[in-house]
Image (tube, rainbow, N blue to C red):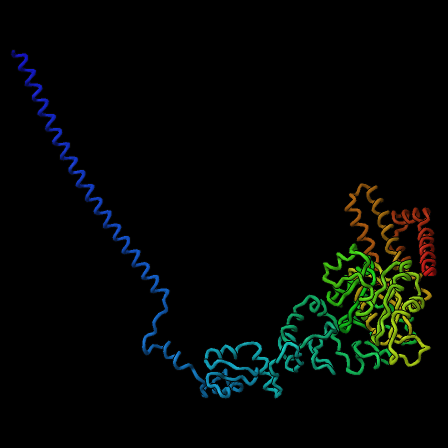
Length: 563
């Protein structure tokens, strides 16, 4: 019995302990529930706090974005109600003396007598205006009694004023042009400029102006002697004015064939700063020679792309012209009608068919026809075009004489004109007006070296100028092959050969030394050069070149005779 009682006692003790543990767990659960409720209350309080902060932020943003209310009696309200007005005392200020006065019928504005413009009647604005560069220049005009008024439209032109001569950026090289009040003259570059300070400043900073700083200053041309190539055809009397003397003989109109070479720097007789007088230039044909001439004139600034017109039967050769932004067309009639200077740049066999397809043009415009077709004479070109360019009855004093509105020039250009390093021989008749004569020399002088010759020598010059470049390339190619044979790389051999030929040409041009004398000076007796020259002579170099020139010249004459 005692054992059973002991087990019962143990069971009762364990149950009591379990009950106590359960009660403790229930108390802990209740405490956790209370803590959870407290956490929920805290979360609700935090949420309310966040909502209050957000509302406060939105109110602050709205208050910031809303226009500020102007307090009664503040400075801003006074400025709005009572704008600043003109004060006569300002005229006594140092920066306002001499140019400030009230603007009529508006006390809120002031007036600048030097600049001829209205200003706001604020002291700070007046001070800023007095410090600007334009006002300072106009004050110089005003102090000398000749105020320059503000331009009323875009088409008005600035006039040259003597105060520009004393400006720090133009002193020493600027002068006026007699008879041309809207032009200035650069004594270093011998060219005309627009008399505006900004344009003059840009010219003074240009590379061309800096490179001419060591040249002797030149005086501007007189109003009587310089026609600038802009005289009308009725005013032209066929007389060539005396050019600036540069040690060269000046040909008369009757003896133009004897005119000397015009070097590539063309700093004497004619300069391309004369321009072409707003003439439009057209090309009948868009091949290699036409592209070389147009590219050279565009790069030298003789023409703008919109002044260049070109026609071709297909689009094959017009792509490059379109990249230059020139006017392209397939109509030759459009070129002949609108262009003042027309280049005939087609092959000789195609000339007759092209001219016959042209629609006759009847007007009084003087056209300059420049033929670059080798072998075709001026007379033949004039004969073909006589039926296509018909002047009106008023412009023909004598029907038996040639039409005065058609002037033909024959020339022989080459590919190097595209980089303004070409050579051009040309011939023209004595009836070509002085203005068009200047146009011809201006164009060809800007593209390199030009010379006027008799027409009987044009085939020979065409061979030397046109074919001579190909013959020179053949020699350079042979020289490159010889260098490669001596273990020099192809690219290096080409650079050496081209540099040697170019340097030798420049030396001959600058020193005017005879080629045989230069060859003897380079050849050391018993040396390698004289041995190589002997090998060239044994190979028949001299005879081969002479024979090539003769064959090419006879071919040129033969092609022209069949036109």
